[in-house]
Image (cartoon, rainbow, N blue to C red; front, side, top):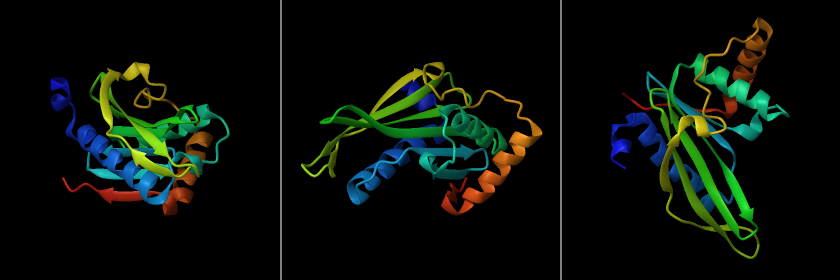
Length: 172
């Protein structure tokens, strides 16, 4: 884990923060949404639910996320979801990807549900370092040229979503 300390501070803090966020959502509210968040070099953080995006295809979602990462000059981003292995074996997993690091932090915690399928327990989040390229959405920092039309569509979607996006400054 010594390499983790050398990793960008935002990424490490983001991992801790998302762990807490998911714990509160799962145990406090009984929901486990797909979440996306990013932090830019000014310390602005944006967080929203991926399911709020109006795209059918995963590829379109990833293009939009890549656009947001580029447009907001992200230094770090994270994406999380519920992973169901079997009905009684579920995990909350998320990955934190840092712009300047070849590795990403993947965190996973086992989720326990009661007989009514309500989340009642969440184990500790285990951190693992993996190569950024091994994560399905680990390439969002790669520059993409969007058509003018696509850029306008993504800009208006971002504006449309503003009300649902949590934004805060991490106070650098």
